[in-house]
Image (cartoon, rainbow, N blue to C red; front, side, top):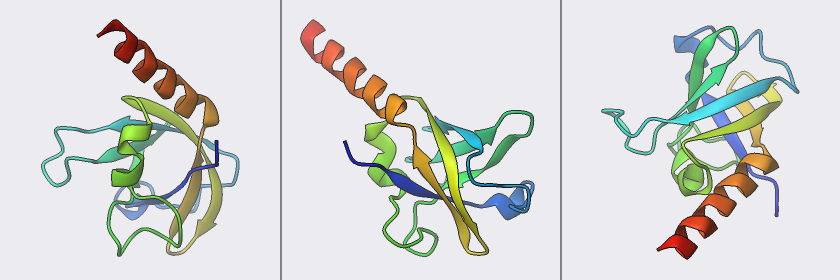
Amino acid sequence: MSKIYFTLTGTKYYHGNEFLKPGMKLKLKKEPDNQFDKEAIVVKMEGLGEIGHVANSAHTVIGESMSAGRIYDKIGDTAKARVVLVTSHGTICRLSKKSLLENRHKKMEKAIDE
């Protein structure tokens, strides 16, 4: 299973990104009721709450990292990630392999039960 990277964006609307450092743990949570984006995924940090969103636009996704739309079906309702690189244009993060495997396992169990 290859590593999946995404861009954390919108931090300027919350706490900025000056506090973010490589290795910090993040939690992702799908927001299916988001009025602006049906594939929205909010990014949270313990002790701070919401700190931004997974980028979902060609204008906010950095390089080859994946958009929220591309990872939406790869994760469950929640997932874990870590900060990899902080830049002035956005923050690159990596999805937890465990989160991806857990979601794959749940999908298999659901398919077997149907």
